[in-house]
Picture 1 (cartoon, rainbow, N blue to C red):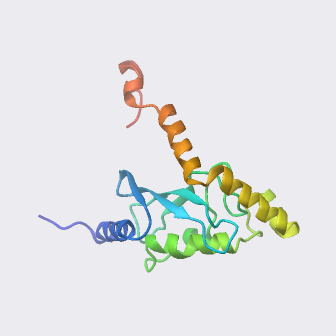
Picture 2 (cartoon, rainbow, N blue to C red):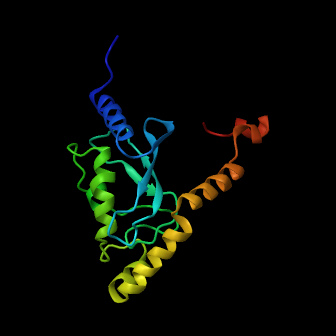
Picture 3 (cartoon, helix red, strand yellow):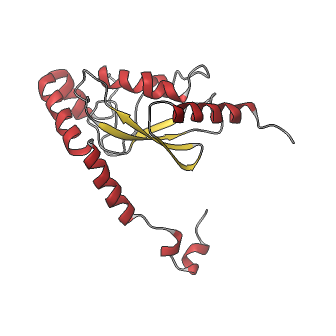
Length: 181
């Protein structure tokens, strides 16, 4: 019996390390698709907020960085408000195999939230407000936290998404024949 390739072992090890950390991790469709509960960093306007962050670990991990995105809304210059996509240079451009999944939640995301880069925005309105109206920016963050990033808001979002999700059984046999699985 052959052993798994080194990058598969590394992915497995890093996922287990993340699961054993203080973060709540849900495996979605396999070990390379995760949802991690992330709490806003202390001492920032995000403090007290909780977000679900989707992590897609590529087959070439750790040589290629994971993709991450916020599933509930967050107001930040470097996070797309509609899709939750994160513009994070450390992850997207300077990732090295020395990093692991825990680094994303222990270092990269807390640093991004504490120190946004308004010069490389995915949310231009947030970047402009951060630069020109910092107190309004902090107030808007706190409003988003109260509306979208509380445990209660997450439960409501879960209830809405589970009632609107479709499964293969929602489609007729004719409809499923043309679908790629």
